[in-house]
Length: 289
Image (cartoon, rainbow, N blue to C red; front, side):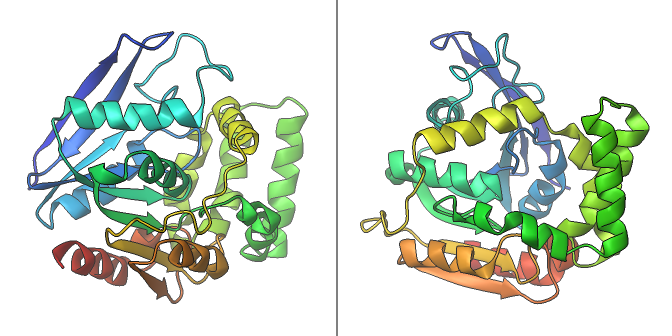
């Protein structure tokens, strides 16, 4: 069994100061795992961190600023920015005294990993994009349509029903979790995995989510074809039935020249749930080469 430890990174130079909560699993070459969101803590990524650690690596998950144990006294457009989120990552690397690490970004984590790669390319040994939002914001043009297509009409109608209750001010635990139980079906191919996703969806902080999206718009996030000198190996792993389209994965491949794209049949947004065998094999092969 891989060992697990938890700690904090002090931030005295930022206003307000924060502590970045992180956990490590296993021993070996370090791999930073950046979870999706934005607005989620890293709790739901302990499973994949342990799975990769069991391959013989030291995996690191952390709570992005304002989530989980990485608390902020003030949450606003000045304390929630992509710039500061990237600095949090770099400060964590320094705290752990890591020269270079593998960076793994899932969903929104891929967007954050892209920013980090742009600012600190020499600190990255390898880069993994898992169902990533991509190198620009084009995914927003089709995301809702793909979410709808991944649900049955009955599931969509039920989701809309509970969404309207939330919009009307019903923030009861039952309403929140009923909404999540229907929405979760959009994220997985095998619907038996939906309860795992549904348990996590209510944890999102919508204020942080909105602030991050606003900042991405403000900075005009677009790194398409802007990594001509990035030579490190890149893995892009994507489910064909994901809410993120294959075209988005292909844009990442176009941007990072030393990259490999792995597409998984019968797979949604969480490869380690729908196609764990193929997903872990692809990651293991990439890390070992």
